[in-house]
Image (cartoon, rainbow, N blue to C red; front, side):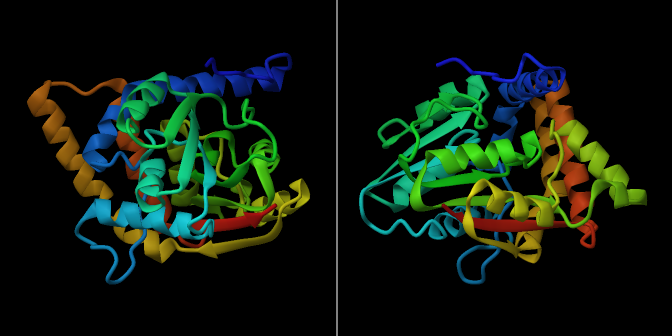
Length: 295
């Protein structure tokens, strides 16, 4: 299935389409690097929960984030269909499928590499990944029992187009869960190190922008979602963020030892990870949130 870019007729639409292509190229080349970050290909930060995750074992925190996201869907044990909007290699999907026997999942990604290799990892499970833009999918309206977006909507700026598409595909009464970093203030109000870290983060990770949490919750309501709740979990995410410098050093040594060089996309990924750590230190300006929105 081909990726669609519905906004190419306008100047701003051309920019959106080019951004989508840049994202696809980045992940086509850099996704395999995430195996060093997570054996389960969880391409996101984690959630530390006493007794349920280990601060020294990164994958236990990353999978705890998956669990926290999924439990907010409240799908129960009945037959259900979940959408992962910006699914990466399908790490959250695989975690969900192993926890819920009656669940089926469908994920979308712009990356051909993620689609191909992610579907290999989903073999034998009730899940499939399509190569599509999460802002404009071919998924049928009013057909999903839940939708998740784990550190994906930031690539298109946490904008209304993403929220409208999620709203369209969900059944009435069902939920969208978003896990991501957000601004606590408008970008123009960022200064010094916070402004620099934010600019570098967006550049190296191909993020259009981070949404401002107040604006995002208002936009979700304007789209039609009710019971919109945003919970700041920055301190829960922080232990996994603190793994970043150790992961960077280990990854560089491993790559140089094995190949003697680092790809351009790998360097961007590493720099983005470093600036994500710096962004996390500016807690007055940034926060990591779990958002629950009900259709």
